[in-house]
Image 1: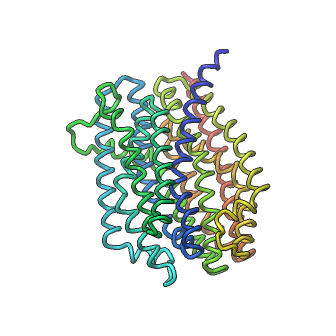
Image 2: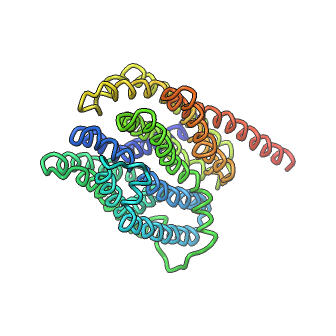
Image 3: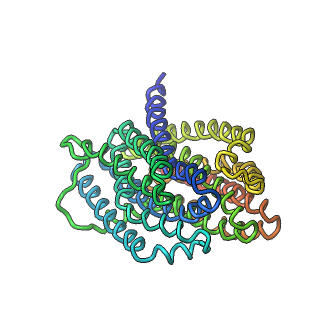
Length: 443
C-alpha cells in the first residue's frame, strides 16, 4: 500500500509523457504517410534524406529543455525559485541563439545540405524545399520543446500532453489538406509540420506566463554555469536525436549503394516507425525524469530507484508488445507506405522490420537508463552510453556488417549496437550503485 501513491504518480507522468512523445513523432510519420500516397517513391526518398535535419533541430530543443528542466526540478524541490528563473531565462537565450543558426542554414545552405545528405537530381528539388522550410521553422520547434519540458516538470504533464497531441493532430489534418486538396506537394507537407508546434506553444503559454508558475523570464545575462547545465545534462537527449539523424545519413549512404532509391524509400519506412517506437521509450524516460530528479533533490535515493524500477518494468512490457505487432503485421505495415505497390520496396521493408526491431528491448533499456543517470546529475555515464549508441559503435558496425551480409547486415547493425551498449550500461549502473552504497556505509 505504501508504494501505491508513487506507482500512481509514475503511471500518470509516464502515460501522459508517452502520449506526448508519440504525438511529436507523428509529425514526421504523418508526412511519411501522405508524401508516400501523394508523391510516391521519390517523394518518400526525398523526405527520408531530409529527416536528419529534423533530428538535429528536435535534438537541440530537447537538449535545452531536458537539461534545463532537470536542474529546474532540483531547484524547485529545494525552493530555490531565483535560480530556477535565471536558469529558465538562460535556456530561452540559448534556444534563440540556436534558432538563428538553424534559420541561417535554411536560408543560405539548404541546396548544399540536400546534396550533402545524398539527394540526386531526381529528388534534389523536393529535398531542398523540405530542408529550407523545416529549418526556417526551427524557432517554433525549439521553443515548443523547451516549454514542454519545463511545463511537465512544473506539475503540468497533462498540459504538455494536450499541447503535443493537439499539434500532432493539426499536422495530420494540414498534411492532408495541403498535399491533396491544395496540391502543394512536399512544400505542403513541411509547412504542416512547421505550423504544428506553434499551436503547442499557444496552448502552453498561459501556464508559462501565470504568476504561480515555477519559472519566469527575468532580467539576466547569459551565465556560464547555466549554459554548462543545459549542455551537460541535456547532451544525452541531443545525442539521442542527432545520432538518429547521423545513423540515417550513414544508412542512407549504404542502402543507396546496395539498393538505390527504392532501398532508401524502404529504409524510410523503417526509420519513421523507429521514431515512433523510440518515442515510446523516450516518453517513459521523460515521465520518470521529474520524479527521479525530485527524489534526488530531496535526498531520497530509494524513491529514485523505485521510479527506475517502474520504468524498466513498463519498458519490458511495451517492448514485447511492440515486437509482437511488428513480427505479425510487418507486411501490412510496409504496405501502408507503399502506395505504388513496388514489390522490391515491400520485400526490403518487411525483411528490415523483422530484423531491425529485434533491438526494441535494448533500445528501451538504454534510453531509460541514460535518462536516470541524467536525472541524478551523473552526466558522464549518460554521455558515454549516448556516444556509443550514436557514433562509436553503430557507424563501423553498419559498414562492417553491410560488407559481409549486405542488406541483412544493415538491419542487424542497429540491434547489435544496442545490445552491446545495454551490457555496458548495466555494468555502469552496478558500478555507481556500489560506489554510492560504500559512501553511505562510510557515513
